[in-house]
Structure formats: C-alpha cells, structure tokens
Length: 160
DNA sequence: GCCAACGTTGGC
DNA sequence: GCCAACGTTGGC
Image (cartoon, rainbow, N blue to C red; front, side, top):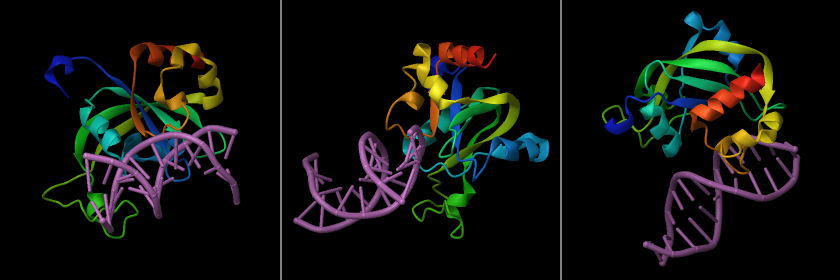
C-alpha cells in the first residue's frame, strides 16, 4: 500500500467456494473468525497485502449452483505468511515458497453480517452501477478484488 | 460436464 | 523475451 492512500478506507470482495469454505462455516467458527488461506495468484495476493485492519469485504460464493454475495466480513489481521504454502500435505502447497522467503500471504477475517438472503451474481449483473466490477465481467477469475465505495453502497442498497 | 478465459510454465 | 502448451477458474 502506498502511503498516499494508506489513510483511505478500502472495500474488498473475497471469493470462496462454499464446498471448501462457506459463510456458514465462518458463522460456526470460533469467534466467527478464519484465516483466508490458499490464495495463489499474484494479483490477489497483492490485494491481500494492501488490506488494513478494520476494512470490510464482501464474502462471495463461487463455483456453485448460485454464485452470490452472502454477507460481509471485517479484516481483523493484516497479511502474514500463509503456512499452507510450506505444507507438502496441503492442497495449497507451493514448493517454491519457503519459511524464510514466503511467497503467499493471508489475512484474518471475522464475520460481520450474513445477509438474510444471497445476492446472486445474476442480479449484480443487472445493476448498471456495478458494470465496472471485475466480478461481473466475463472471464474474470480474480478471487480478491477491491470494491469502489459507490459499488459497496450500491450493493448494500440492493440487499435492503 | 462443458468450455471460454486467463495465468503460468518452460522450451527455444 | 516470445509464445505454445498446459492447468485452473468459474459461470452456465
């Protein structure tokens, strides 16, 4: 994060496959917290490293019957090395990462609000205010992305 | 399950 | 440094 905007609050969106980790899993976790492990894409990693404590993110379910925003989370710990990269038994193992020179990072998040109903991608695509979001654009696979304040607002308005 | 889009790898 | 091949993501 560059110091020029380090004081500005940024919103985010985090994708998770519900088969792997769902918002219900987070709801049932101790203190409703989890580490966001397993990000193995450089652009997504760089965004993780920009996150500040206290910022908010949407929790999105991907690769499922109904891709949708499920709720919001709070960033409770800034980026630190993801140990699963050094664990040969982990599906997220990366032999090119090491303890001394960690390549992959994760943050800790806490559930803030689970929506009473999912906000499906199909609806998000219909909202012109969200047209610039990578999320609604064809072929985009980014699993961690910034959300503009106006988009954040627009999405919360849709939910109400 | 299909397949388009994308990121990464590695030979040259 | 190019680019083809490959693996992965993720909507449908």
